[in-house]
Image (cartoon, rainbow, N blue to C red; front, top):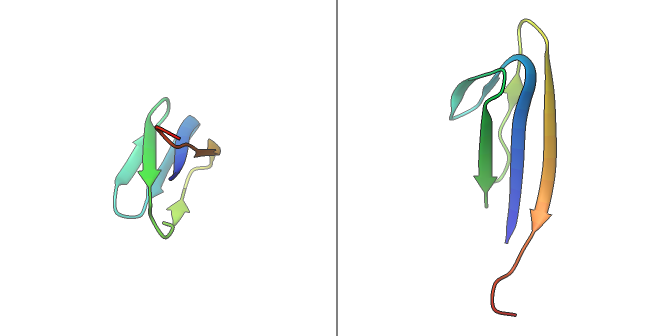
Length: 56
């Protein structure tokens, strides 16, 4: 399973299908085909990908 975690460190950004993420907010995306992340005011966004399995 692949999980992507996004945290808005500064500013605000809009994530397709989720809405506006404000400074300090986070979202976890699991098994998605990808969404568009946009900002009108500028933002600093941290994104990372985790590969995990349980019981292997």
